[in-house]
Image 1: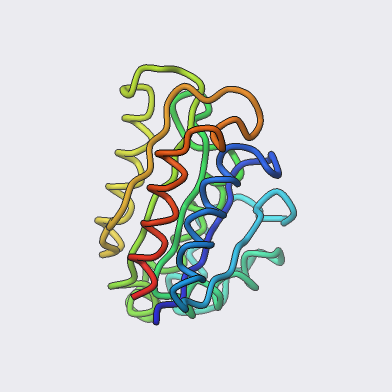
Image 2: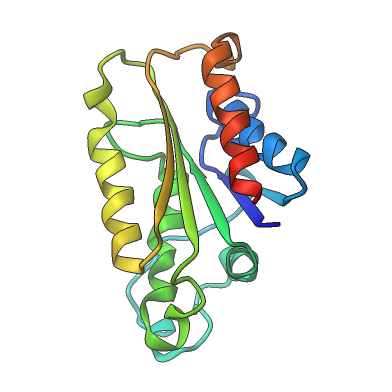
Length: 184
């Protein structure tokens, strides 16, 4: 059974992103996967300043919560990246998190991430699917560079109010079933 880490990049607890990520993890857990979730809003993750300490195989020079998250990332086979669309990109919480993946850029650390799988979960307010295009492309290019296959996408337009996605039974079932598939 796989170990799956959900990373919640929305500042809203029980909001649409949280509901979707949680439903995927619930399906995975039911099938026996070990699941874990990180709520980025509760953490102090500073921006990468390009010091390149990690490129030399060393621990990141920032003294923040990300240094405790790296082992959790490394310990899981699948990572769910959940973020709503904010100004056609991810939340600042998710962007800071992704920026710190530069840690996996050096040969000493690349093997720790290469071959893991990713799933993206992207709800947003507008009804036009193109609204998420830039955000999805950012994830695709980042994962391609890090040699992380993108194995699933949950893209949900038209959700504005906190947690309203729970009423979209087809989407909720899709998330739950995706979780069950990811478990094996």
